[in-house]
Length: 115
Length: 114
Image (cartoon, rainbow over the protein chains, first blue to last red):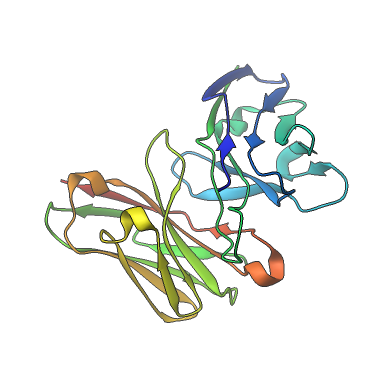
């Protein structure tokens, strides 16, 4: 079964600084990969997705992520964070097998942007 | 319109009482999911409907029930709420055979059991 690791539970970053959030998944099969974000008191929103092709994918609000098959990773980054980026970020590869569309969510990284 | 709606947004329930949460989508997605989300934890898949077929996760099989009267609506039912059910409940929908695994989430229902 697929597993996903987000090693950083909490990250604090200054406004205007860069941000990188790490994600590693276990499957040897190149999967679809997603990053979701949960703003305070809201549901999850899709930030970006990788299906195939260029390993660097662009998302909303200036986020991008880079897929690495050799490292089984899908790290998220942003060049310059804004206070509104404070949220919880979840990496989510699909569970392997079947066409149910089930995702495996990491435990999330809480990002706090300070001024 | 990629909106998933959930009602109510906030629910207060007494221990031992039933709880019914509602989700709707108008994207003609064939699959609808229910997740439980507690603070500092990953969203936990409880069950999903593919078309009219209900699939419940093994470790929550007896705790949650669901119904899907038509393609657009899906409910989550708790027969007897316990304190441990206090959480955010997230509904999502997708059409995995056509669009891969991208799921669209609703805003969630925050359930508090007292």
